[in-house]
Amino acid sequence: MFAPSPWLRPPAALFLVLPALALPIQAQDGDLAERLYRSGERAYGAKSYKEALETWAQLLQTSPRSEFAPQALLRLAHHQVDVERKPEAAMPFLDRLRAEYITTPEAAEGLLLRGSLLAARARRPGELRDAMGEFNRILDLFPKAPACAEARFRLGQAWRDQEQWGRALQFYTEAFRLHAGSDVAPRAMLETAEVLDRLGDLPGCLRMLQRLTAEAPRSPEAQEAAWRLAVKVKHRLQKAPLRNEGPWPAGRTKWLKTPILLATAPDGDLLLFQNDLDRAFKLHQNELVPQGPPAPGTRAFIAGPGGTVWLLSKNGLLREDAAAPQPLGSLTAISGAALDRWGGLWVADAKTPALTVFSGEGAPRTVASPTANALASLGGSGFVIAADADRKLLYLDGEGQPRVVVPYGKDLPAAFRSVTALATDGAGQVAALVDGGDFGEGVVVFGPDGAVLRHATFKALGISGRITSLALDRSGGVILCDRRNDLLIRLN
Image (cartoon, rainbow, N blue to C red):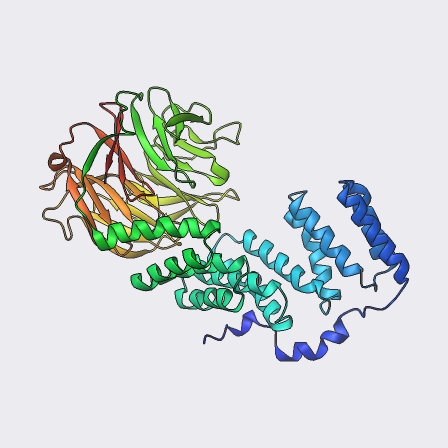
């Protein structure tokens, strides 16, 4: 059993002085404090927020030692986060709750909220220490509190984000074993399965996904587990030869206007960019739904937060929720883009021997890298890039450092020369649209360790067109974008 680092846990001496540090909760104007708290609750329930906040502030001023004072602080903090959407404004209330009322039951929930806000503020793995300290403090001081379930899950996430897979596995496992039946358990089981996969234990991963679908069949996580299970089995165990199913959706041909880019939305719908219309669309129930404003010259696009679409061109980054494009500096030959866990946008440029990261705060930073001709996300746990000059695929960790290097042509009957596009499915598979060399034009599907799972040339599949992009769907199929013939083709 792993013992967390000392900086994550308060020293034993702290427990001896906590009673002295905490403000004693006494019956001071108890009736008045309760009336003020209930009055604030009534106003809040009626959405008279100003009245409620003023009433709770008065309670804190007149009865700071009342048992209702920590409850008021917690409500004030939640209001700033849940209603005002101002997490920084919640911190003073949470700081006071932590400093003056650490012995109260409300302190556990306050520490959880404070830790969650600190984790959301982090932009790099090394910035998670303060958040982890709060989650560990909950386990130390309030071992039976309901907040412990979420605290264990959050610790698992923090270790996952630092790619400390063994430690992440420990906390995820504790979360679903010690808190069976809670809403945390299915989330922890889903994450456990993915960590097992990262550790190379595919049988363990598949068993965990099956267990999740059996024990929490109605949960959203069970639906997610079901498609991941099917896709992993199809690609990694069955490995059936790729078969051309023809135009997709079935029966629709010449119905697009020069599709050139494909991506997959979080809900599994296909996103495509049509060059003649200068616009992105979502294919939902076989109907095209426009996404965002026109964006001429788009070279890459991704599914952004909240179902939005982000489009990148030499004119900058255009988001649905932004009035004007965000400049991308000297990047004029954009070859790919992806978001990391922290909301940072990673951009590859075919003329720049580095990756550029735009975090929204301060100047963009560069990460040393070979020139990338294509870039895709590995489901929040890194990226994959194609470096044609080096004839290699590189699987990168969250910091952009190579963890797996796959030479072009490895485990194939012949080598290819270049990669036109990359796609991932969130379940560990990577698909590459390749061209040139003795292999010629075709598709190769790789596993999370870079092993070749499935491959086929377009000649063997009877495909003739100009294939410019591809995507992996939730049924394990490969969708191809044929610019010349204005259609989509599915391989199964």
